[in-house]
Image (cartoon, rainbow, N blue to C red; front, side, top):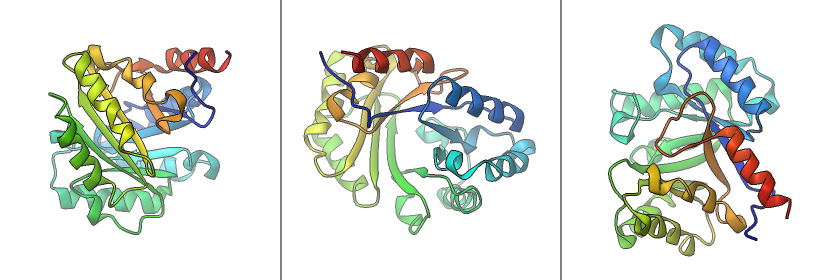
Length: 230
């Protein structure tokens, strides 16, 4: 049976917009078996932003080290409408205050954010399609120059797209890679990407999906348990 190693982690994707819901989702995520949580700055309401960051800053250090901070722009499926410079500046400020374990930055601002006191995930998303394997390899090569981890997520419009995205693991031999596909066809790749230690982590939702094809956190944790029990 294909096995998910104990080193592979589940990241709980949070959809909170308020300080209260953010606190609740963090607690729920860890109670349900998340190893880390991803916090989307772009989903936080402006009126709740300062209180939310203050709450994160006051969390115990061991919890903050299990946080991934990101600020997803609208062109990458997020809600942040500012410029790349504004996006990177906000990320840098929040990382300096919260001191999370990881920060997820898009490929276009990766070089703007050097020297952060957090492990850097350089990510790229395509919500419409899965590019050719040669295009994906180029994206991986470019992202790998500036990241500790590379994350490439595409939309699968068929099973062939799933094969294309997972084939990237043949390229990534010396760098951690998170690569899977979204959508109905892509759901299975969210599990296959961590099989046999391919990728360091996969993502599951807590309250509501933050991307098409996500598993709920308890479903993903059960998949992990079943794989490891054989």
